[in-house]
Each structure stands twice: as structure tokens, then as C-alpha cells.
Image (cartoon, rainbow, N blue to C red):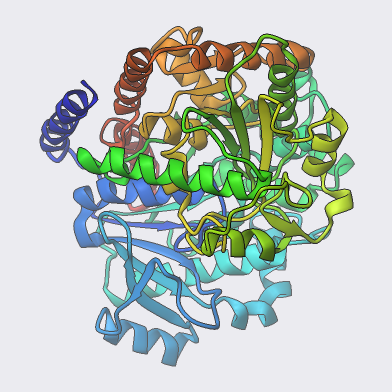
Length: 571
């Protein structure tokens, strides 16, 4: 049944592509820049890398991504350098303009052009750049700290690269659009706006810096959203520089977009600018194993999960064990990690819960190495009959005593004893295939799960639950996530049988959310094999509605809006 459904979905996508290619918007050339181009940090990497295939279908080799050249030793695994590309321009840009650019292609579906730029030479220009941004756009960089300087100098370098390419190849008579992602590229958007006025600028905020900060500082974001003043809160939370830059980029861009309705409301209240259009995040089916390889990869993933658990816990794990996971950035409250642990504990304490369950927390933390005892046991297949020291952890942490996840596990009373039906395992590393324990990518582990949980408090979109259903794994999220709101436009979001449960979350109903998640996981745990197959089919069906082939139309709307404004400057 699943195979047939996915074949129908794939065929439908091919038909959509044929229709879509008749209308590629208004631009002849498109540049897109982000700190996460060929540099996986978080969800924006997934946005760009999955959308690239559809974008390349539209613009072919008149599409170029620009990312930071930050690997002085070696080359990014997903960057394929090609010194034959744009040789004349690259040579001129370095010789005459001091730009250091590596050209190649991004090793993802679509294989688009990528320019990686070294921004470090521009540190000497920092003060003059910041002064110019104040003079021209009232961007206040006086109280900058942390990653502000690095991000802004990269954004400035991006602007210089686009300007150099534009002038070298005489694109003055062409329609050119440039997409800048997040506050980190704000100065690039403003630079292009000033120096290349005929070029259309699009600025996407995936999460407002001040909104994330309000939520991260345990303040009630949603109850008082309409009463918050963004500038005032930025001063209170020492966020003036990032907020000022993001706000001005949103106001000066030809088209300002954000990824969900909930973030659009946030931007309206905190940035004083309502987005011109919402551009929700999609996904590509070409990241998901097809046909027979799907079941094979799922079996391999489950075998590895079970092996790691058995070595860590010191006793056999049933093949029927329910594997549950959460994942994402280490934002303890914003990502709902606290709620996830509480809900798993609630399930553990239910006296009549009988399904063996292992809950994995796949959240990168400040770790220094894969633990040697576990690594040896897994790699050498050593039989372990007693629990390892700290049987909750796959990689040793630098700050074990201060780690919030570990402290929550201890405080809730988890022991990971054999007689307990619910166990917790914290995997505090990036699953890039080289972590020393699993040695598999995140997707190659995700496919082995039975259910995922993302009870976010602050989540502008929510790529992790979308990825989950794309891989046929039912998921639980909240209506404070943009993805959760999108789900409720398509299904009720009230029953796990639909593939997604969307739990209502507010500033005040923490334990209601905890209990709702425990209940949904329990319902799933009691389903038969055939019922689970039906749930997985529902996942695939819903995920097919969020493919980039369908969501790209929102970007085409954004392109038309941006071109409409910039065209007035070309007259």
C-alpha cells in the first residue's frame, strides 16, 4: 500500500513540474546567500538544500548560492570545487577587487553553482562598514557582540561578490533577484540595495532575533505579543544590534517574507513590518529512500539503534521496542526538550504501560568525544551484560554537571533499569555519519524511529516534524510551530492515525501538553502492524502536500513583488 501511494505521489510531482516550468517568475538570474550554504548548522541548511533542486529546475545555471569559506583545512564534504568555472571573473575579482572566491557546485540534488567567499580580509573595514550602515540605513551596531561582526562581514562580502559578478558580466539589462536569509545576511541586502539599485532584494526571516530571545529568556511571548515593543525589548535583552539590522533589512528589502503565519504575526508586532508574503518551507522526496531501499534502510537503522542501546544498557532489547525521538538545536525550552522528557517520564510512571520504549534525545551539545567503552563494544560487537557508567549518554560531555538535559534526566528519576518500560538515551552529537557510535547520518537514523515528538514553544516553521512524516514516521508537534498550523489547515491534527498530532500549547498549559504527548505515544504503541502501516501511509500523503513543487509558487509571488518594486528604480 505504501509503495503504491508513493509511486502515485512521485508521478503527480512530475506533472506539476511540467506545469510550473511554464511560469518561472520574473528573474533571469537569481543569487541566494546564507551562512548555511555548504555549512550545516540548523534548519536553514535543510530549507536551501532541499529547495535547490526545484530552484535549479527553474533557473538552471543562472542560479548561484553564496556561502562562507570557513574551512581553512580541507573542503566541505558537500562542496565540489571546480576551478574551471568562471575563471576570468574569479581571477579579475581577486586581482582587482581583493575578493577570495572558491567556485564549485553544491553536492545536493540539483547540483547548483556555489561560490564560497572568504570574508576575513574585510575585518579591517569593519568600522567603516558599520558607520556606513548607520549613515545610510540607521543600523545601530554600537552594542554588537558574539557572532555579529563575523556575520555582517560575511554579508558584506556577499554583497561585494554579487556586485562584482553583476558588473563583470554586464547584467544591467537583466532582471536579477537576490535572496538573503536571516539577520546574518541583512547587511548584504542593504549593501545591494544601495550599490545595485536595479537589483531586486528579498529578505527572509526564518525567526526574528528578538522573538527568539524573548522566548529563550523564559518570557511569555504569545500572551503579551501585541503589547511588546521590539526596540524596547531589544534594549532590555541586549539585542539592539541584531534587532536593528533585521528590522532595517525587513523595511528596505523589495520583498520581505517569513516562513509561517505565526512568524508573520511576530514580525508585524516586533519588527513593525508585515511580511509581503509567507514562504513556507517544503521538502523534497529525493531525500527519502524509494521502493525496496526504504524497508532495508529502516531495518539497518533499527538494528543500529538496538545495538547501541543494548551495549549501553547491558541487556537485550526487543525487536518490538518502540523507538521515540526528538531532535534539533539545543534550545531547552524553545524546542520543547523539557516537555519531551517530562512526557516520557509520564509514560514511564503509568503502571499499566507495557510496551518497551526507548526515547532518544538527538540534540548536539558541548561534547568532546564518543565514549570509548561504548565505541569499542559497538565496533567489536562485545557482549555487555551489565549497564555502563551513566547509561543515558552515548558521547561524553564537557560540562556534564551543568548540562540541562542530563540534569533533567536525573531529576525525573530515570534509571534505565531493565524492568522500567521507558528508557532515555541522550545522543549529544551531530549525526553526520562520523560520530564514532552510530556512524550514520541523521536521516539514516530517523528512518528507524516509530514516532517523533517536537513539542516546541518557539518554532517559526518546524522542519524536524516535516522531515519525520516525509520519512513515513508519525510525529507530534504543537500549534506554536508554523508547521503545526499548516497541518491543521489540511487535517484535524487531533489523532495519531492522521500521521500528525498537533497539540495546543500556550504560555500556561505546560503539563496539559506533557499529558497530551504521553497519551498520543501510548495510543500509537498499542496499534497493530496493519494499523501502523496505515498511519505511515497517512504520513506520506500529508508530506506530499508540502513538497517544494507545490510551495515554490509562494517564492514566485515574492519574486514578482520584488521585481515590481525594483522596476521603478530601473526607469
